[in-house]
Image (cartoon, rainbow, N blue to C red):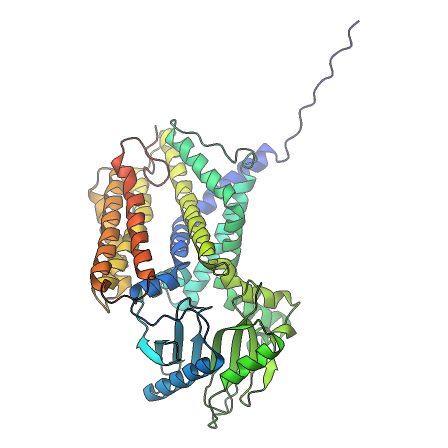
Length: 508
């Protein structure tokens, strides 16, 4: 007799088929509802990582300060900034940043919110104000990412909600693809365009998953921060927002407007360094400067920390009110100081920025291909949506074109409203879609225009600054613009169908 072979019991899948279908339906619905916003925020975010480099590109004749100056130079910069603010009648709050916070530059910003007036200057290595800051394109990119050029509060709320939607989409995407990690290196080429784009979508999604989670969560927290503080005030401080803010950021300045000497910020730096010898000046924020109610928040960078700086607060008498180590161990305080560098990758030098930029672009591609997959699936099922295909082509490729046209406009004409240039570019892209035969033709035209305008922006910039630029970042960004143009135009030079953003929906 033969012993009967053991019957193999098929393992029950970890996630049921019904659950996976529900997750896929939710993933598709959520992605489609927020796709355009997520795409714009992700693409602009990949660029916002480099806003400091873009600002240097726009003003390459500004004074360069590579190393953090001595405390007396920082003190001289504060005095110079205060004198300028007094001359303009806006000596209310002053913010200073050193090379650790704004690489290669020393900056002074002063403002009076009640009067609605502000000023920004670059300082030289001696702490003297040299030239006003002029960086409209960098400001445009930053505002596009952080508030979509909407009123600040509502724009930040919308971007925060977009971060929540992105995080939710990432989770539902993972749960709707049980084999996503097993198939992490599978890229099917040469077959159906929809399958190629699905592989690209899934691979980029899983390869960059830790990054995607970090930027979506930190973006949501940054965008919704004021709302979170309001909820904290209701929950813990009987609705007293002032107490909630003081608990997180320290005591605010008082309304005592009695004249007082400008804070001796050099002595404050030395006081911190007496107990923290490795601490290095990053920034300073003086509220109600020149009054008996003034408060100075000194930001000192400590080696090995993700946060830009640890905050040390000083009263009008120059005595320390609170120190950074008083907040060590508080999870909330650590999160607050780490949010921005974690979100933008500004804690790991230029290498970290390049990595964040590449991963940010990958996230934009993931978002774009998600919609193209859905449109291609409709076409495969005999329910094409050519109007939506054109619309998505405009959403996808009006953004690189808008970035290029605003860069060119910033170089060509000082003072031109870049938001108007951006909106006109989107309108022109929609006009291209109206006259084009299909989505594929729309993409080809917009890709070509984007590449040409990026090259034009670099060429005009070189012509304008070649004899006066002292900052090598000018030429680095120009080369990057040309490389971007080549990457955008490359698929137009080959005949086979492209994967990803190139051919959005024409699947057979």
